[in-house]
Length: 180
Image (cartoon, rainbow, N blue to C red; front, side, top):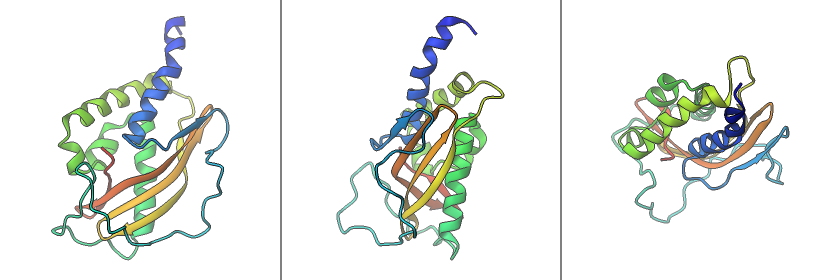
């Protein structure tokens, strides 16, 4: 590999992680170690209700026209987070964006264009045959109707980190990433 490409790899990895977390500042990245938050993940998943504070303009709001998630909402949400993380680090546009991005996020041109660049960079960040980070220890922090918040670690090889309080929305019978 060309020396200038090797020097650019750490910067590209950080940029790609920024898009995985979107605007969420609660990411901790370490090398060859698991998620590092200093606290153990709760043993049980919580399904507490949302606070009474009004949602900020950029935060998702519940769509009352969407059907409520099934009784298996937590299991389906964990599966969606895992699938999204795998697709994200594989640079798989069809799954990460087309299938698992919310309609609200798809309508945001800046978020979409930045995400496209990040997915394209994954081939440089993780060359063919290299280990790609996967979601680990997904915890459903809250499900409130069609809105949810999750926290999880990710890692494999030399890259690991933690995502805290990432918003998701249930649309068209599917949990979708909604942190744009």
